[in-house]
Length: 99
Image 1 (tube, one colour):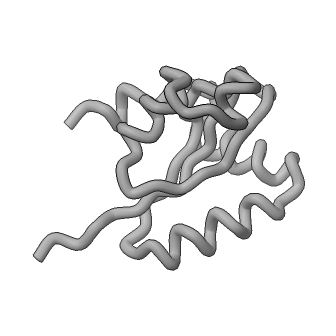
Image 2 (image 1 turned 120 degrees about the horizontal axis):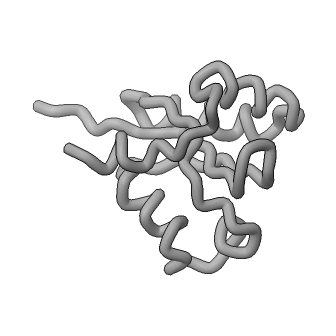
């Protein structure tokens, strides 16, 4: 049996711009939704269309816990997390959208 993978991710408007933390079971689909603006909300309002960071989890509970923790973090901590994973703030969408 294949276990479901969950993702915690950060979207950004640009380097050091507005950031959004979220979680999902289908990262390529969710990022596409953010990028396309098909869902009203924070990322559409603030133009946070770049996938700049993500982590993979084996359970919904673990992903949700991490997302909630990160949403409580200071902005500087989130920026350090992004810089450690993706120092050039590249858009990682192609990396996750390609099978």
